[in-house]
Length: 373
Image (cartoon, rainbow, N blue to C red; front, side):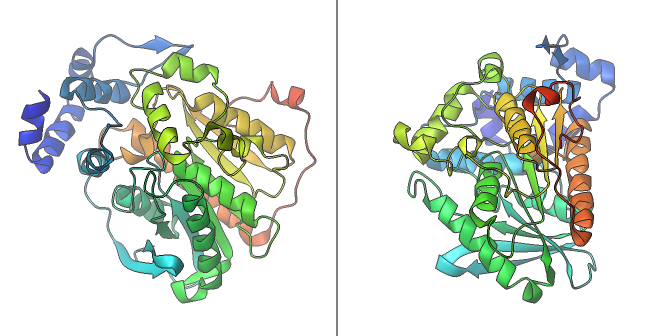
């Protein structure tokens, strides 16, 4: 099956996938198999069908060859990202230190719009501007913002802290050049998915005591702790796209020395003070090995007195924001994130007072998806 899939052009594979997801619900259920229920959650039919297709194709997120893995994640964008979102214009840029970037502008968005500085996912090793082109277009169009996608250096060629340094440099450059980019320098958000969520968080902490600072933080299923093994990693570490072995593979390339992984620039969950973070939206996926660390981080952010929304999409798995071109569930979840970004930036336009820190015991009763502080 894998060799057959490799012989078929990607555009035809994408059409087959779209046709499968357009089938009536009973037929899709038959193809996907019996419902999967685990840890009090039910895997969404769209998610289960995509996992079934991945299983039949014999593909894995990671590979022993970094070049092959990078090619695979780019191909995945074509398969599940859908057609390019229009009208969105793009402009490729070169930031200081030869950092590549791409600026997205939806439609006729006027000058002085908000700006999202976005860091892509891919385990610090395999993603890039191209693999996340569709997601950046999606956020730009549906949140009504300009998006600056940053191509930070990748491991293993450039391990930690190269990516952190590039992301901090990119944010400072964007803040200084916001007007020339058509953006309001007082309305800059940081965001990212997976490893990019980690880098967005670390960047926000690095610049949080300075000026300018980001006014909002958008985190999609972020990785925030490379030192502790949470319960969700044991439950969902195999069979749900991001695997236990894959997580080890990525971290071994990004931070080869285990002792360095306690650095808050690798594991922001371990940072002593999170109060410098801006208001934050964190989306987790129910069937994601990273779920629990992301939700623990949300509670720590709340304890620091920072307004934070935690939203768990119970039926989805890691990476859903890059899969909006098929089915409905992935798109709906990512639309919610875009709406949160739009709302957060609207609030940031007028500022928002911080609330007092709350006791961790008081958070136990909060439903997932609520304001935690």
